[in-house]
Length: 468
Ligand SMILES: Cc1ncc(COP(=O)(O)O)c(C=O)c1O
Image (cartoon, rainbow, N blue to C red):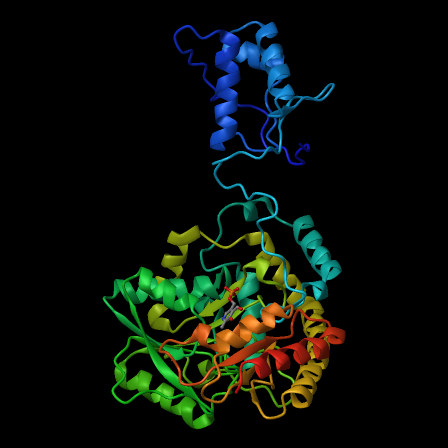
């Protein structure tokens, strides 16, 4: 039995002493505390009242509480220090809620290519600390109250300029809502559309699964629109309130949407009086060509534009932005207010400061150079070890997509790769309708350049093991 390291509360004033007939005070108190530990309400690390404090609280003598604590300590339920209050021990408790028994967590893979998250070791800790410190130093006390549900004006103004400059987005600060990641942006839009009675929203096939799950919560049916080498193909007569797209780097195939398809998508939205939801999730990391402009800049009244710091900074920050058409602006703000009043204000102000100071752009440039080197290594390794297979999505983002010919089971290949110590995601995980061909997402954001060749060699072995 080891002593737990966290302590969270120093009182347990809800503990009540219910004595069963014939039960002694000591037995009743010991049983009550043991039961609370078993049911999980007193969790490992929680500090209990001192024996004196508990005795006063329960109206019993201190001798009773001291004896009970001594017994619980001997039984391994609590740890009693010389001078400190007793702490609930990290015991194995059968049936306790929320506990993960040691040893049941899966072993992490030797090389993880399954994530498309950024390398969090590149996080600019010093710049962020600077920005937070300076923000807090000058913070008026009213900034600690609830804020504008749309977010801090300073960040919206900064973003309006930044997105115009870097992505060709046309967004007045009044039309921007700061959200907690792209996920909250889609959630807000789906709530608005569901309230308007809409029951169908189109999405690229394949695509990220979370927006589809979010839609279903509001009774909206996701409609898959196939992806080919030019991006999404809008089916004739598509009936949907909106179409979600990832034009700069389609998730997960990596295809860049062609100019013609962009025009088709916008023409569909105008015809249907619907919306395009543009998820511009990793556009900052583009390596080879001129950045592709966001579709939003071509028709700001038809396109709701979403950006996030999940790739540029770290997913943990939960900061994103939603630039909406005028017709959605008021409802987007009121929906955000209902959801959480406003996003964390200090983080927003610090981010605005970092963007204004130029530290943000410097961080992106540094990270882009690191990722470009990894992308180069991945494409070289794939060309060397899997020369016959098509690779897409190399121009941007933090992953490339390896395409299999018909007949190769991508789930089986991923399982073989896992057995060889490499975690990769099968393309079929993201299908709306079952697809004729599969593939693998090779995420390189997390993987050091020195491990990439070894990882791809093992993926090639996994492919070989599953092809006839
Ligand atoms: C297609 C796509 N959009 C958006 C995101 C980011 O979502 P969030 O900002 O909620 O973390 C991801 C995450 O990796 C993604 O794959």
